Amino acid sequence: MSGMERTTDEWQRIDVEHHLHPFTDPRYFDKKAPLIVTRADGMHVWDSSGRQILDGMAGLWCVNVGYGRKELIEAANRQMSTLAYYNVFFQSATPPQIELSRLLAEVTPEGLDHIFFANSGSEANDTIIRMVRHFWEVQGQPDKHVFIGRKLGYHGSTVAATSLGGMQNMHAMGRSLLPGFEHIMHPHWYLEGGDMDPDEFGLKAARALEDKILELGADNVAAFIGEPIQGAGGVIDAPRTYWPEIERICRKYDVLLVVDEVICGFGRTGEWFGCQTYGVMPDLMPMAKGLSSGYLPIAAVAYNERVHKVLKDGGLFSHGYTYSGHPVACAVAIANIDLIRRDKLVERVRDDVGPYFHDRLKAAVGDHPLVGEVRGKGLLAGVQLVKDRDSRTLFDTADNVAMRVRDLCLERGLIMRAVGQSMVASPALIVKRAQIDEMADILADSLNAAAREFGMA
Image 1 (cartoon, rainbow, N blue to C red):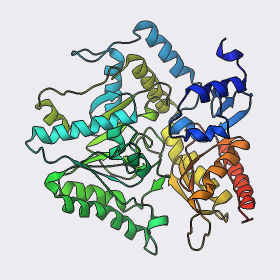
Image 2: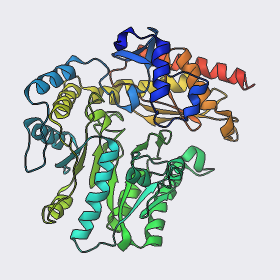
Image 3: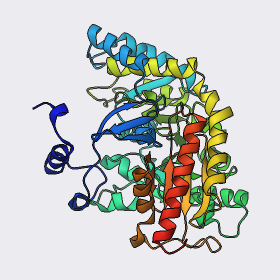
């Protein structure tokens, strides 16, 4: 039986019987069936019942250019017909991998001219760990191996990437926190800043890095890693003083600065990369998701000349993946970058739909009794849910208020994501103002319904 001949009930039964879903309690499906998504186009997906749903998350923060783009589909078909696969081990290369390397050197911040390819953000960040530790070992500083990340930071879900991140529930599963990884406070002013001015709090949060470096000893600290905006942490957007102070501290103590652009890269914040939005220059920069707009798995690490010179003199680089620089994935990424440039999508986010998105969300839900804060940049937004606005009191975790709002949005035809006690959104860069209006209206209606359910209407 072909897939198109199955009923929704059959798909759901087979899925639950055979598929372990990421980041899901399997008991969830004892009460609720999985959503079966069968096709997509533009800003919408369709489920197996034929219902059209506005995708406010661009897949998983990744379908930057929207669904069904023929330019990317045709690029994959052409490359697959010519050279479906060859590796870049054994001193080999392929034209798409070479061309994409050159293209990434053009669009990344000046100085990040060297590229290593992987297949996911997790793999890119595993590469960061090995590359940075090798960098210091080659220079006779093997003790300089500790990475400092942030609480609620997310850098992937392999064991190594889990350790880089600061998600306690991930650390707890299987004792996944490896030695050599430390975490400092995250810079969420609304929940952590108290009565402090945002700029003052930004400096305080950044100086937690200096305190940790001094505690560990600078000779033991290899790198600091952070997302420009902490996506899976709830779209935590640091005050403007934060990133310049982080960079100053890294330079002062000769700690490499890694800016994780897996979510923020390729136009989402209104610049090509989030580090440009915040005026900070990384030494190394992992990227994925928007690199191919999610059409095929591909990731990369860009790094500067200082790192390159050391790696060049460091002997054998014993690291890589079977699908590093996969020619079809690279061809799709090239077509994706060309499309972003051709349609001026980065500028569109910066000058038009990004500001409109935040203005419209604030107008629709900023004063809602369940909302304490609307935050983010460009086409990244977080809506903080609160039990009491005046005291910034959160709901009890057991209330699952964000999950309930998420479900209410889905019932009304909108995909948003629940993260902790926040609702988050990251629509494709092609989103229209009318679709932003629809998102804002559905979210407001869903919040009204949740308020009635929680006795706050």
